Image 1 (cartoon, rainbow, N blue to C red):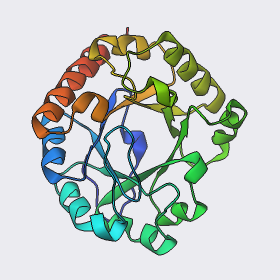
Image 2 (cartoon, rainbow, N blue to C red):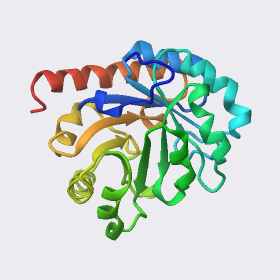
Image 3 (cartoon, rainbow, N blue to C red):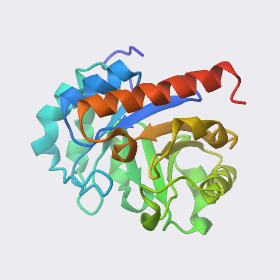
Amino acid sequence: MDRKESEPMDLSQYGRGTLVVSLPRNDPELARAAREGGADLLKVHVNVAHRASGNTFGSLAEEAERIREIAAAGLPVGLVPGEERMITQEEARGLAAMGVSFIDVYLSALRLHLYASGLPVIPAINAETPPSFWAGVRYLPGDWLEASVVPKEGYGQESRGQDLAVLAAVGEATGRKLLVPTQRKMDPADLHLYFRVPGVHAIMIGAMVTGHEAGTLFEATAAFRRALDGLRAKGWA
């Protein structure tokens, strides 16, 4: 969706069934493959060692040129700005000029200066976030939440009914639109079960299902796009 560079991104434009691709590395070729496969949004990383992809991402300064090239692929780009290491407030203010459209960051790592970026900030919870914190997310700016609710020992395994039950509980507690990442080896054929959960809004595919190369990433993106479009046509039934 086109927007003027001076205008902040409006996530409300992205309805149920939005498809986000988390790039396994900050590579413009992967961004183009995701776009061609039907992605709506992209996500890149700095300052983190990423468990699912096995990659370590450098500082914002080290990754900046690649991020600009990824943004040039034409899709809005979200940034994971770090965890223990985090971008500074000055760097946050410069993200829009770099082509970044939104921020996605774990609640436990969310420095308040990230809101100074002027960009939408999507907080993320994980399996270690105490359920007693969930309702408190209602009071943070924005209305999306990344729900990374699968325990680490479950990464890459088949999806479980427990995943859906936890997502339902998170959605009820937070009142947020849930962005659900493929921590499991998620099958597009199972998406209709995920979308039985009222809070599930968007799916984010990553290395667990995309692989690490442009060809496999394109194929996975296209498969999830077809499944999501089919569900939308049927009214999510």
